[in-house]
Image 1 (cartoon, rainbow, N blue to C red):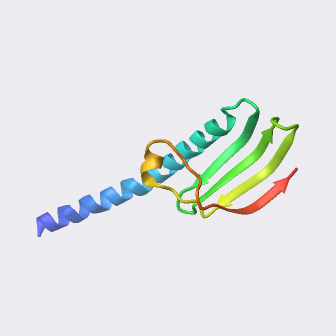
Image 2: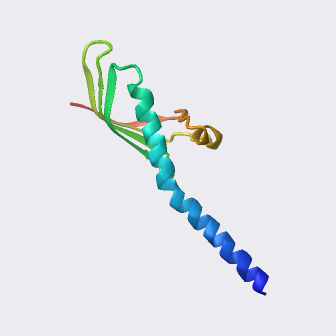
Length: 105
């Protein structure tokens, strides 16, 4: 009986730890996306928000000087597929996305 109780406690702790790690993974993914967007030196983004459970990426204040001046106030992609292996490597590929909201301004 004690072994079963210990095993149950360990499982609960593992699940709790995994759930607690999600915000850290979201912040890491957002930082990686921001870094990739700004890598060319001509594009900037004010903020990036990633929702792993929501399967979404939100870009706020996206500005590009590549072909003149383009500003996107808010861009959200939903239905994003997150391959776990790629996310662990720090890659955040965007496949299967659907654009939900685009606001210029």
